[in-house]
Amino acid sequence: MSTLLDLDRAHVWHPYAPMPGTSTPYVVESASGVRLRLAEPVAGHRELIDGMSSWWAAIHGYRHPVLDEAVRDQLGRMSHVMFGGLTHEPAVRLAAKLVEITPEPLRHVFLADSGSVAVEVAIKMCLQYWQSIGRPEKRRLLTWRGGYHGDTFHPMSVCDPEGGMHQLWGRVLPRQLFAAEPPAGFDAGPDEAYAAQLSALIAEHADELAAVIVEPVVQGAGGMRFHSPGYLRLLRELCDRHGVLLIFDEIATGFGRTGELFAADHAGISPDVLCLGKALTGGYLTMAATLCTAKVADGISQGELPVLAHGPTFMGNPLAAAVANASIDLLLRQDWRTEVKRIEAGLTEGLAEVAHQEGVADVRVLGAIGVVQLDHPVDVRAATEAAAREGVWLRPFRDLLYTMPPFITSDADLARITTAVAAAAVAG
Ligand SMILES: *Cc1c(COP(=O)(O)O)cnc(C)c1O
Image (cartoon, rainbow, N blue to C red; front, side):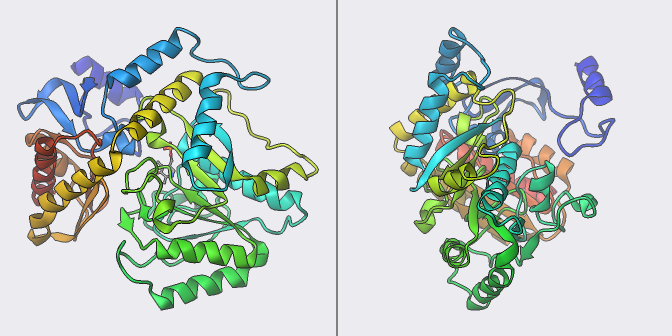
């Protein structure tokens, strides 16, 4: 084991990590259900309950027999073929399914290979739309602060410029427009002053704006904040009024996590462009999708270059598409809404006491997402170890302890997760 960790430290970059590595990751040998099996016990636990769903993705847990079977079945046909000039059933079925389950009038699907690329494609679609219909000056983006849209360059330009991980790049990135963070609280009533600010900003810059891009209802890696769906209806109205496209990044929120199948459903509206990822394949393989309306696609088709000039090598990967189909079918076949409500109730109850702990600034729960915000930066190592002592895997960041467990998490395991969050809040 020490050899493996030595090699890891010497050669392997981890997310947002220095090189050589300074912290010691846990070695995972296998995973099943909601449990990660470690190569060596941590604080007496050989298995940890996964409170993170591997960053929002593993909604059905690990080694789910239906998903395993879908991958094996597809492996017996082909694991990959190029998508230029060729097509195949898993990708076509997936695209049709995504159009069917996402809000009207989203109609066309670009299958990308990661969330950041899906956001790049969404931005490219919008810029190219305006270019193609003879409005090339409409090439800036507007977002609100507190967002996260990925780690490649254009997505970085719409991440929160201060709280985010990308301050370093201020001089390199295209300069986008930022509104203030949306007022906090899913149930909070509309804040008139904020709405007026947002309206004024969009009106003032409409001539140079290609699109507004936001994470609807839940801002994830930018700070785990929730806001009222009312602001999404307002954005839809403003974008329509001023001729600006609207992009929703539902890479984290898609597939039931917030209590609706898509966060846009809370607002009863549809964006012009929608990004999906993370739970798309049930956490099995890397794949993301960018959907757009016929209006956007038709606009692009009128251009001098009437094609969307994007085509990743592994576009539409059959293995990923097959498991995405199986994961979505599995989700829709069950009463997922009741499961998410059950987890919401368990998190609400389990975290209620934590709000009174010293050092805790806020506790909030929405759907299968539980957040404990501290009044100080979290000691990641101490918090992680405290959770591991309770037999739970958590990965805090900034001043946030948070959990978004797999939808299959039992009530007993959920109680252990909230106990671990409470312990991590004390230790971190
Ligand atoms: C994770 C995430 C991304 C980036 O996806 P990757 O697959 O990590 O590139 C973009 N937007 C949101 C909202 C995300 O949560």
